[in-house]
Length: 247
Length: 311
Image (tube, rainbow over all chains, first blue to last red; front, side, top):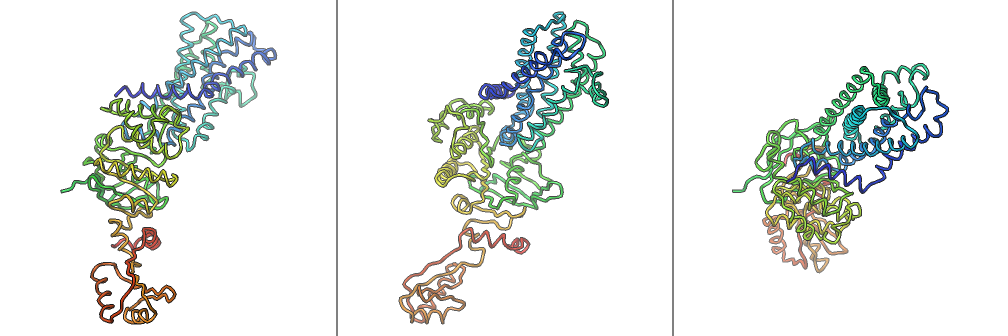
């Protein structure tokens, strides 16, 4: 018998390799969105800095979110097709099954992040982050990936069908658009503006932006970290309790 | 003395205010096939889920392989194998990889079992194709093969042939009989009466969360009215005489047959034959007709369950 978590992760990675459209979506969609906003519309936004420098942090976040739909669908089809029950009866630790999905999701995120950063540089991205700040960027993105990954696994376990599971993750994909990802929140209309200011993705994006500029603000970093931790804890407990309950 | 592989008393389960299982008692001796028969929604899958530790019962005791499912789920899990209602195979993996996955997750299983199971279930040729390309029958076989990796003593088969074509069903039946020959205990749910009749040593009929009847297939068939003896005579005269001397009989003049209600037991049949002898009537043909399980089922579940529960 091998370590169940590694067996599960290997299974998830095989899935990704054999069903490349999911990775394609997760990587290509954020790149397309980025090209659209930066290359086509970028000149129309006046944000005080070159638009690519403004938009890249938000695109990193978008790259994480776009991968989640496939994760929710995959978890749900494991559930509805009886594979999770099979693992449960075999006494595979619940952590292993779900962690496999989360880690595979984070790995997909990293591929998408690398693609976004590559495209950003091609479009003239000029960050002034130090090496340590770059590490901070990667760390925060991975933390966000883990947090939203657990939340998505919970959504996937909770949903009745793979279709609704995919749909349930749409808000996570839409949320970045109602944050400071594309334009600063204070340029938005009333209502949306307040929402954008206080929703979790804004401090995360502002932290990424600060780190890449070489001037992160401690308040943003603390808020970003707290949000990620909160989302991760809620997602984790929701996922594990649903896993235990649902047969 | 036979030991119980599965012993259930007073099992109850409700989801919200909907009672799914309403006091189930059953006992399955080791090395036998037990079939839980019932229509969709009777509670078959819920029963399997409770017995296999997937769902907690509201009350009652359930012992599987000698262990309590509530307090010793781990020991139960190491003794059982479950093949659910839908073939739980990983469609993106090949047949071989699916089996390897089970080996990797089962304590004590060796890699050599993969090839052996592929051979045994006639899947060697398709072993390296994705399970998504398999036919329904092949998926079921792969599913069952995956269940066997851990070498379980007790196997739960939840509607193993639902949706299969007749040939695949027969293959499945052969496999189930072979498993029994290996000494395992099988708990089978089905909505097909002929399947229970073919495979089971004992059948329990489940309707709306209650067991409405329990027994061997033959016992069940005897339990309902409708068993009758049928005589065929050579002439109308003989038929006339016989119809006169047999109370409650129904005659068919065209076929020259007479149906006489009887429980099919030797005593009552002997009485009928003696009576024919007494009046010097000879029948050309004689048969005892027991209703098939379809009749049993309709008779048992068509009634108010409260009436049938006393057996």
